[in-house]
Length: 249
Image (tube, rainbow, N blue to C red; front, side):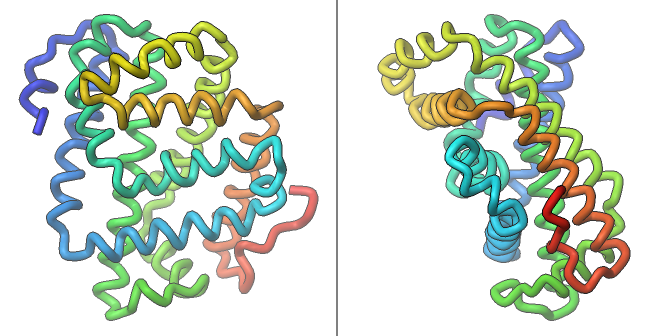
């Protein structure tokens, strides 16, 4: 809907160029995904993976200091069902973003967009693999999911996915420690709703609130990445229980 606005916006910095390129790629992917006959399968795969992550990291997910942040990660960043309007609004305000936001914040936004694009692309590819095998995504098992994971041959993309989680998580944590950001979000709620940007504002406010409640985010991210790298190694080795990890990880 707002692709022309993205294309027409002039950008100067390297981070702004990267954000523009990724938003265009994500815009086109969203159109492709929306038209795919496997859209529901992709959503089921995303939901399955989100539940798997909750199970693998249940000690962290149930921890009162981390629960809200992980719920935001899995609901809003990993499996953003019903976020079409939010994504359209990001395209819509892109000209103002590159004009008013600090360059380092554009870099963080670019990382989030790349993470969303990469994650959803991998899910769609898995849906296509399940479809070729004639397998039902409504009854995914750990064995079938791992088989598709290995068959995809997307190991570099999986590594990049973990890098993005680590990098953007650390960057977001630094930003939310700035109390001015919380004040600005509170003050701009009304204007955002009047400008029909309520979905985008709500997303930003939820993220800010979730990360503000967490302590030692660097430790949380370190544990998440370490565990997921072990899960990846288990899957590639054909481990019979790839998602069961030692207690000290």
